[in-house]
Amino acid sequence: MIYKLSNDAGRETIEKEFGIPFRYPNLYRPNPVINGFHETSLSVVTMEDPKEITFAIWGLMPQDFKEDWHIFQENTNSLNVKLEELNSVGWMKDSFAQRRCLIIVTGFYTYLLENGSTHGYHIQQTSKKPFYLAGTYNRLNDGFLCTALMVNQTDPFISSYHNISNLAPVIVPKGSASTWLQKESSKESLSDIINNPKQVNLIADRMTDRFFIRKKSPFLGTQYL
Image (cartoon, rainbow, N blue to C red; front, side, top):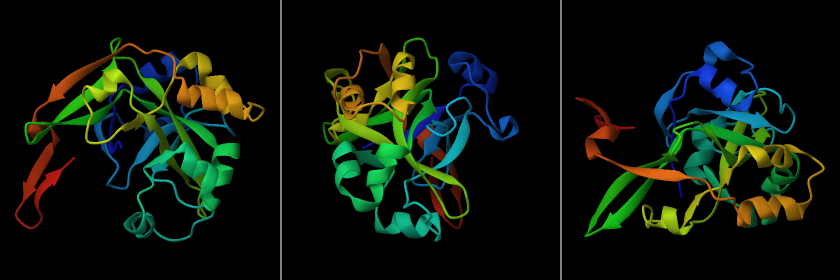
């Protein structure tokens, strides 16, 4: 599973790369470490508004959910979802059929268990450009969107830097973006994007442990990004 992402690209860089604008440009802030265990928002492109970039809370919750994000996440972890869950869990089923999205990132963090210790890696494109991850979303009772990363089996490259889990995000190339967002797309074409992803040129940079440490608080102890 993946619980940390990065999106440190500038707003203009993102808009130029994908050819679509932010709906609320003044709200966007680059972030090198997006921690899913904190309530945080991701930049997304949705089926209902494929020509603009908006924001969604990371962590899928039921459609029209009324309670707080923390309440739901204390009972289940919905930062990552598998296709099998989307096809079998009642409240998730409509999300995949009717509310798919593309999550914009510049990378994601993986962890390798080696000699009794874990080491963090930042996975990004060799070009360092932002890219899409497959996602699904719901709309909460207050109108805000919430989203989850879709994950699938790791490929050989990712497995070299991520062995604490055999699941990793599904990368969606720009050429497949319209298929992912079209309501008319067949289950077969969507499954093909998930199960037979196109090759993407990636690199892995090893991160120091100190990279994830934000600060020490005399009251709360060490805070981790």
